[in-house]
Length: 533
Image (cartoon, helix red, strand yellow):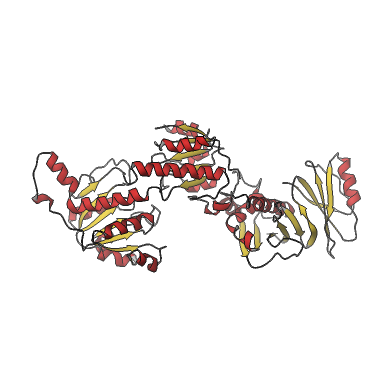
């Protein structure tokens, strides 16, 4: 796929340093503030990349408006304002900056816990209104209390570190973080069911996903200590706002600190106006340092992508992390070429569904498993799908058209043929009752075919330009006839190569400058495929 990015659209007030970094490497930058839907659709269609914060919603409609969009950068962590599945279908990379706002979000969480425990906003508002009222704002010490952190990622860990300084006991839950690792941070990792009854304060630091939506709900709040306090500086919707309001009204919840809401800005302010609620308008990452940091990070990620350096922050195609590396590009080209050749060799039968078995031999090529699989599918599905296909959307589109796909790695095994390099890709394609097997390598920097259905080219067959693949019996000698037929249609033949003979068949391959319309058969040979790489 092309990683060229010439024009980038900056939205949502992304720090100007982002645009400056991009312009310094020759990328044109357009900065816009609030756009109507119609304006957004028009602007997106004219850019290769879009960088947003949390305000702009990048929907299926927005993605469908552009044929040139290649990347969406999120200057921040959450990508719930981006339709990631639709972006994947359209072959658009989605990147975020998971580390850029970590400190700011963690500090804001800690500030919310402190404000909640000492009624700071309420007391401040009362005094500004002229009321000296100490009795109404009796607070609670944090020392000795238990803080439950749901989600022990970057932000959760930083919160734990800071709140331990207040003398709090930290417990938590994270399905990914091992118990022993959490213990190294001073956090007791527990199952969720064991967390709820022990917590005096609960703070959530997870993405908004189907299984985290309304994670804190009526059922959970009923399991908590009476007077538990809830903090959400992550994403609106993780806490069931209606359930939280019921618990506050009933007195079973002692207070809540909310920086994010299911609807932003909220149109119903009932929860915000509750006397036991501390609320802020999504300020978790809203610091000068964080906004500059994420702007720099997302710009640098795009620059790295354009310059072929390893990618970070890829949300919808993490396998592309090293796909831009110069050492990997010949292997990607080989995989695409093998996929394309396999599809042309395997003529459609009653069903278009097929099975592709891929074996990667050698330590170096085995490391490329994550993107060589999609690269093979790109070649295989070229011209078979309505969407433009690339390394991002190939697995999704393959599944939709009935392609079964398996990749196996053999880092400690050399390639099956001694004539090929140590590292190689072997592809077996099965469609109906027909199958073909291909073996290739890019160890020399070029996509090279070494074997096809057991027939071997000892010196290798470089894949490129237009190639015609003829099958013949071992007893036939059709090269002269092939050359004659090609010259009869004014084809410019640049090479004619035959595989080593087997008891079954021999493959003869003609390379021409352009596609050939060969309407007349060749005596003693059968044209199986014509492929333009």
